[in-house]
Amino acid sequence: MGCYASKNADSKASRVARWRATGIVALRDSKLKTFPDEVLDMERSVRTLDLTNNKIVDIPMEVCKLINMQRLVLADNLIERLPMNLGKLQSLKVMILDGNHITTLPDELGQLVRLERLSVSRNLLSSLPETIGSLRNLLLINVSNNKLKSLPESIGSCFSLEELQANDNLMEDLPSSLCNLIHLKSLRLDNNNIGQLPSNLLKDCKALQNVSLHGNPILMDQFQQMEGFEDFEARRKKKFDKQIDSNVMISSKGLDEGVDL
Image 1 (cartoon, rainbow, N blue to C red):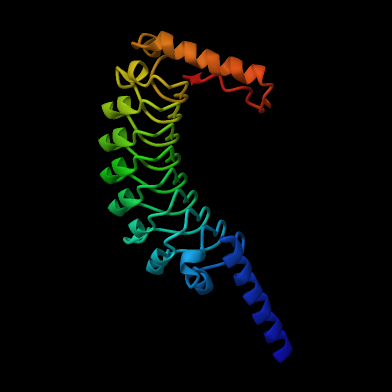
Image 2: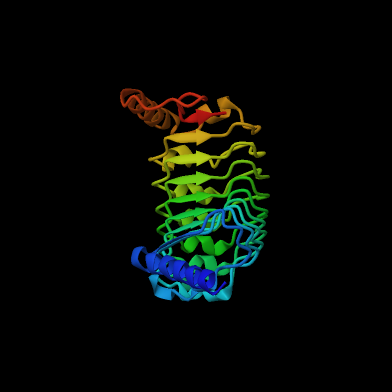
């Protein structure tokens, strides 16, 4: 028994030593119900933390000790809320929270000013905090498969945003501030209840190449009559031709032509 305990302690010590050396803590599919204490004790050493597909319900306040963490992946757990001190994770660039039970995001989310990728699909969100507009380095946000009725007007202040995914929600319209997103390349809004887009969207979002609106009441005629449609269509076709020229792999759905109504 003593020999087994000693070996177990050695294996745990070697695991922690490996984590410290690489900065990567990967504990997917480990049947965890809580954050491991040995991870929280590592503090500044953690760069990436992946706890995907466990049974974690709460993110402890002590997570704020991981101040050098750049990637936090907590997909497919049982998390219901995020800690109020989340904003102390000032090094965070990627946060993946897909497939949890999160009903709201704290205002402190806006303090994560280095965040580049935020994915909270397959949760229970009914709104997003206005503070999301403080995320000026955000490149991608995925809020698909929630219960969102709208996007905050402040989303238009996420000036670096290139991809917005909000499929399978309850939205009827979009904020006019989307037109401020001059770097936006892809807008995916399938399966909502959107009847029209902001009138200047295609004209002002000069990088936009892909718009997906499958399963919405908006009509193709409406879309084609929007100001800026011709330039959007040229960008879309150019992107599609590049995909063809590059001999990209074609999925079962075929190539994405960039507009789906």
